[in-house]
Amino acid sequence: MKLVKSLLLGSAAGLIAVGGAQAADLPVKAKAVEYVKICSLYGAGFYYIPGTDTCIKLGGYLRAEVALNTNSVYGGQFSGTGGAHNRLSNYYTMRARQDLNIDTRTATEYGVVRTFFDATFSWTTGNFTGQGSATGATGYSATTAGTATINPTDGGTSGGSLGVYYAFIQFAGFTMGKAVSQFDAPWTNYPGNNFDGLVGGSGTVTGVNQFTYTADFGQGITASFSAEDATAYYQAGNLNLTGATVAGIAGGSYGSNAIGGSRSPNLVGMVRVDQAWGLFQASVAAHDNHVAYYGPTEITGHPDDKWGWAVQLALSIKNIPTGAGDTINISGVYTDGATRYNFQNLAGSSYSMFSGSDIAYQSIGFANAPDTVFVTGGSQETVKTWGFRGAYTHNWDPYWNTAIYGAYAAAQFGSLAKNAICGGGGFVGVMAVAGVTGCNPDFNIGQVGVITRWTPVKNLTFSADFNWTRLDQKYAGTALITPAAAVSKPTAVYEFKDQDSFTLLLRAQRNW
Image 1 (cartoon, rainbow, N blue to C red):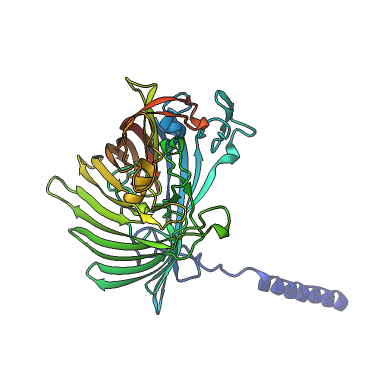
Image 2: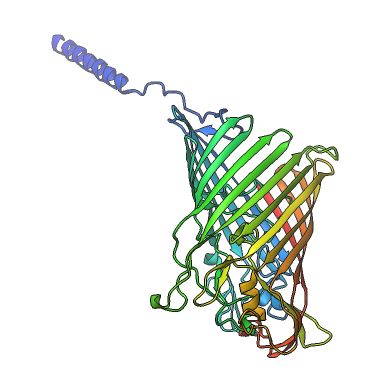
């Protein structure tokens, strides 16, 4: 019995010991889950990145749109097969786009450190560009007029495009990276419109690389000085008029472009007053026109650099008496050798547009506004431009608003350009041919439009934007012209005449 009792007691002790060991291995109560916390320091939509003191905000939009009577989303029929107004011109262009932006901010002893990134993912209807070299952006190409391949290979699914709009760091008053130019008004190309091709001012809506310092004086008063990349958006052209032809000029090409390598960024200064009543801004910019060579090699020589400049004034008036939230945005600009600050890059500055005629095969209107022109052996001559743009937006109710907008830009050439193109001053004149009764490369562009937006629910907007653009060119008479092969126009007599472009953009957009 003693032996049995000893065995039972030993077993019980062993079970107790094992039980104690197992109890020690049981999981303890879990820590509370660390939920993402709202960051109220920088406005709505910011959250703390877990485990850090950095706040982040995600945003963007998804957009579906169709542009009627245009080869692109969204500009006018100003040149190429669009300006040809024949069977090569697209009657519509469609696009689907997703935008994503990421905003991070961290409070430090030097102030807030901010990074901002904005990218777009787009799928766009192919762009027909005519005989010989016509290739669409996605899913649409043609090798000869009337011969097209629709939806090649995978249907164009992999043919979409990625665009990086903004990618910059802000720290202690400095902005470093790709951001809107300090020269631009805050509304860039859009005082009230969706139309991309508005002249009359600067507009780097897709950002420009820069190194900027901004001083904040309080009460909404700031001043900035910036060095900005000139190569991407600010080269309207340095044209060598030697060798220009009637056909080339009629195609909107006034000689050969001889831009040299980059030498200096554009230098920009800006002062802004942004208060409850609205905004006022004054901007100035300097642009270095650096030309390569007169000919194909360095022994042909080159003209000296010539600096151009631009100045712009912008004004926004908010909450005017016509209704709550109504606004007026206007700006005016003058440039001398810095054309892209007026004919911004999405608008372009080269035109070749066709339409009907009562006295010739067809009519044509053409123009070009470079930064400078020159002839072989000579110096650069700047092209002067001026313009304005503006819009009035009225809110009918919380769901509907309408904006009426307009723009105007004029380009004026100097005596060198006018003599080389029209004759005089020792030049025969490229356009001094039979039938031409008036010759002047100066021109004007006028634009008016109206847009109506409907927002049935928050952040979902449907809009329709109608635009009319008129090219007022200064040539008169007729000429025998052989247009570029890409537009499928025959060699014939064409009448010089002002031209029009009408476009309509229908858009649905969901912001988030």
